[in-house]
Image 1 (cartoon, rainbow, N blue to C red):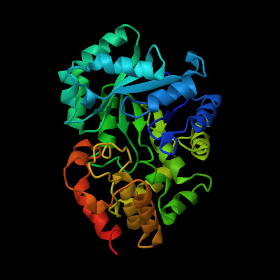
Image 2 (cartoon, rainbow, N blue to C red):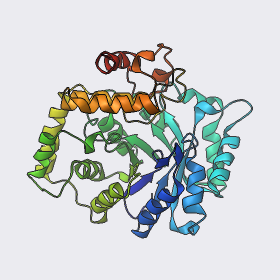
Image 3 (tube, rainbow, N blue to C red):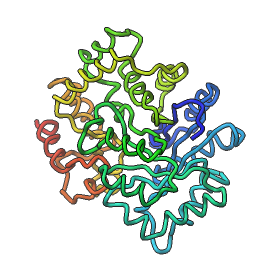
Length: 368
């Protein structure tokens, strides 16, 4: 993968105003990104409005050779009357493009591999690559190492894999960041990283944890350490960040403009912080929002988990309750409204036991 600078702009969490993607604010972010020599944008068919917004704030404003873009095929949305060609062409049309620089089969895991086989997506994408409509083919992955190895053995045509990697999940036996990275290394596959800051969680660690990093270098923020951790891995070519504020972009570009791999002292500090964070049983939600789309009760699950994690991390005080009350006034039903239908758990790439976790959230947040 020929990417000049490792930072990639993830378009799943674009800034919004009144519930709609804010195109003008997105233009500002894209201009900052491109003017500083960064080129890689990441969108997907499943990111509502993202491909169309990308057309408006980049494609219609910049020459095609000034940026690269990845999109993804949502296998779970394919039907007999809406196959891979229909979805692929829809994405091209939405984005206003004639080809994708990078194209992925989205969110491969045991419950979704069958969709891509049923609709011959591998063969279709191979044909699109042969025609030049896909330059590099990959897949994003949320599963265990044995299935990843099987996929790479079965599909040697894959150029790269997108993995969830961050220092908290490196040895996690649900996310398998470290082991899945090593398998990609074994098969010579480039790696694109998603969730390097774990949905923002590693940027907002407890002050006493942040102080461990600050003692080494007061200029290095917790977010910068998290980005440098993944950027230091040799096979990592792109590190995606869902930036929706200029301040976030400035901080992230500062990391990658003159990238410095972690020192041995910093790695030791990461290990200490990891052990301390993992001693607190937080809900490992990355706010991907796959769980919310089909919730019949309109529960804003990721934001409720965020409020509960505030309590777990910082203790019982007003902040989690004020945040939760704001959710109930604007975007969410109560945690106690869950009817245990299970659609959220089937959609969750983190394999969180959402129903049980919502009960925990309700016991704390819904109490009078």
